[in-house]
Image 1 (cartoon, rainbow, N blue to C red):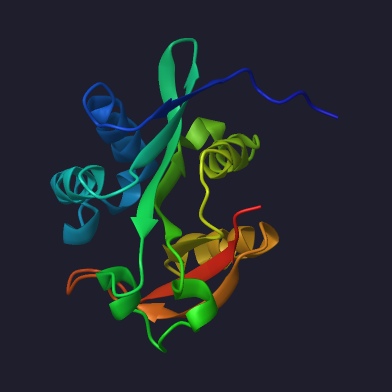
Image 2: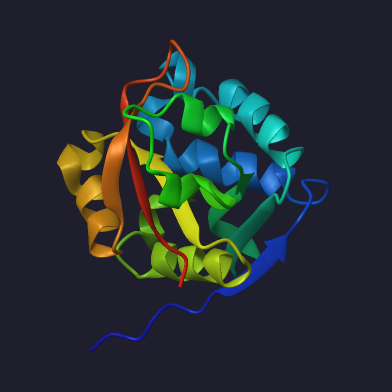
Length: 179
């Protein structure tokens, strides 16, 4: 059995000190896709700034030897939020009657994949939350379906589809309980 890599998990509720680290890790995580408009670092930066201003914003970053190696962030969404409005079919009232956590982004640098780091970051983010459900969107084709399968192994269930922007692919909307 291998030992989990040594990382330090840090939690942030504003972008003030962490925006640069998020952009840096994102560029490495999404490097093969950066030529696509929706995945460009500038497009991510615009989304990040918007998400950072939304209610309940929280980011968890993993650091190894002082350098960022992965991240996850999200915010609270309520019934009527555009996140839910773009989801088809309309999600069950069970999921929308109280605020939920929308996991907006998660990623780890290629060298840190398959080390358990993404799950540790994910779980640390969820540990900070009071919402009953967490939802995310995934490109079902990402990694030849491996990313979607990974989220299923983390107990997420498919509940619909969404296309957040005209430049975005159609994504699968998934949900699970926070605890």
